[in-house]
Length: 363
Ligand code: BMA
Image 1 (cartoon, protein in one colour):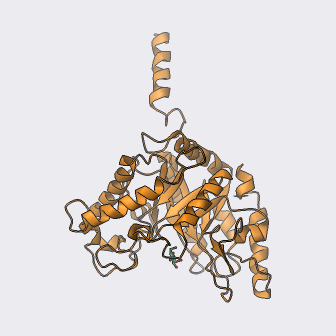
Image 2: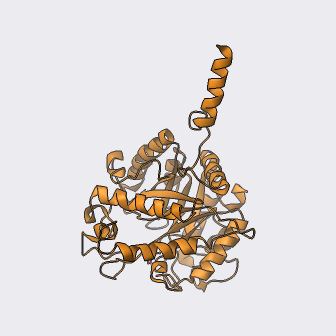
């Protein structure tokens, strides 16, 4: 009996990784590198919150693609732990993204950042396949339906998926191994400002879109990807999970939430409580995948106090647009002008807090 029980326990440990406390990506064929990344992120999320910045390595305040440069590094001496990249317009076969960034240079920076042991996350603001306008064109509620199997834009969408897959297949390290990364398509679903938004398709269509995307990329041998489900501001778990494609498809449950007023930290606290709660039950990662503040108080105790309450993998600020005349709103720019001093001081406090993790902290 004893022998039988220990054999049973051993068998369970092999076949039931969740019960045994070993977490794995949703993809049953995940590459060793994807498994390693997932487990590393799981460990790190217990230690603190990584800082991420969109397009950090591509351009910044008053500079454009300078080798090794980063606004965050200019200010703190360290890179963010997470680097965000954007692939909008790759689907059209263009050489540059909708933000005028070269896809070859994105590849180059992904390779370099991976070598530095940084974490990579990719977003995709793809055009509207029905109207040929941007991702923000919400003039039709039939777009998602039309790109699913049987829809009139399905063949076109497949050519877009092929371009995406072909590009992903070039993201390899020096040994020819696919670089693992987080992919966050179909983002901010709870809002209605992208053609895949909540009121622009049915819940079932949105789920099918997600599943189709993941299955398509897996079928191309891309088993190196961790998928991030994402919504904009939400008030309940039910609202958050409307359109969730399922635990077999998703590795990270993420939220985009910008500071739009005094209720922000309370709402953020509320949302992270139920999102991180559900990630713990599901054995998934949690992230605040886009955020930023209105003004110099954003990198404050209030933000850190919320982040310290929950296991959150990373907090990412959106891009610094190349605009020397702009007043910084989202991230602190490195230029030492009077107006920026307060932002810089706040950000350095945020950087120096033991709970925040930058690139050197995750080596
Ligand atoms: C948005 C804005 C746009 C940009 C897009 C993709 O939120 O920053 O200007 O084109 O992200 O990066």
